[in-house]
Image (tube, rainbow, N blue to C red; front, side, top):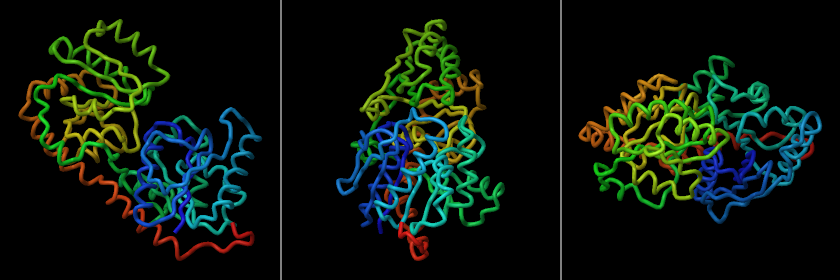
Length: 373
């Protein structure tokens, strides 16, 4: 079976691009023919891909705007789908369905909407709301990241079994899970946070929390891995709070697993998420977690007891729970063991088998079309 994934920008280093590469590679290992097309930007990625995967660039520029931009995206999507002659087309973002209405009912391929944001937020894009409504009408299946979000889609749109939850996999790291179980984090004095430096991730709240933690535990260090539009303001905030000696802004790194291996625990301060890849990564490396209880993601991932949840935007509660774990290495050890067990639920091959079942269910019902697209 030939599967075409279409992403916004394959060269981006975000979680959406990473998981597309993970699932695409898993489907290749399962015997499928996989193509990943990049709507904007080059057809290259820093993430691992199976050699058999074909990548291609559709050549659009993100700066295009208005009706001309919409027409260009719609035309590029249709041209690529016709060219690839795929059995299944996976649009990796509900936004893309906003451009499919003129031709989607007439193509041969079955179409899947792969939504990476929870239904309670449109991520600041009215186009995403339009795309979701279009996906309800045009997609043969809608894949979301959590059971809670699947239920929200069913309740809002009355979709029945057209929507299903398939979790994102833990990325493949060089360090096997069997080796991680032998690691001892008790000697570490590092709290790790990973994510783009944007409002969504709530690092401003984490800095306020760390100002409290640092007073109680001056030997500990907060390391923030990531980059983004709020970097300058966050560094200024850290300086104002007098945290220069206890915070390191690592920036972008290709060796994030080194950061996970050196940490004693993980903190996440997000205001909203879909299914946060960083929490899955933290589980893989056996890190106890303190996380905000934002809509979809953290509560589901940490239900096994491998982390603690606090209210969104509550710096005092975040500081309290981080300090409590710093002071209790026995509890950290117990949570680490649960995290490593939990990580096995998100094995890439296991979750790819769920994708395989979905593709098999859709493939016998390929649409007939006049143009053979």
